[in-house]
Amino acid sequence: MACKCGSGRIADLGAKCSDNFGVSISSQDHEGYVPTDMGIGGGDYVRLQWCLDCGQIQGKFPLPKTELEHRFECCGGNDDYPQTHCTDCPDR
Image (tube, rainbow, N blue to C red; front, side):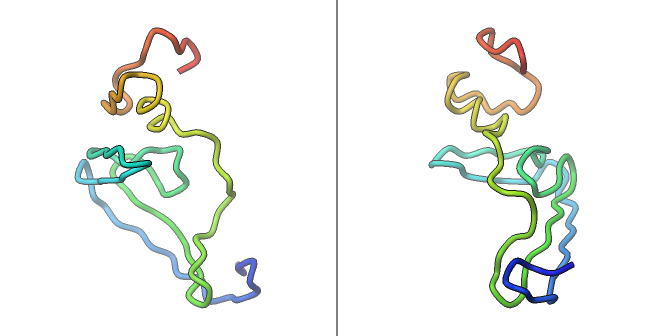
């Protein structure tokens, strides 16, 4: 695997954090399990790769709006991920 910068120095990170994961998106905080739609793993595990030369996280970007962002914007800030859904979102 090579980075877009051309480097082959790709580090592969894996970490088990169970429900101790934390992330802040646009000043909204989430603590709990790793969301599965952020490109960094999911559930109990963080998993990502990054280039040791340029620092770019590897993956397919940009990502569509995540479930967590939706909850912050539409569901009254409810980040009880992924247990509850708002009634305005039948596709969730």
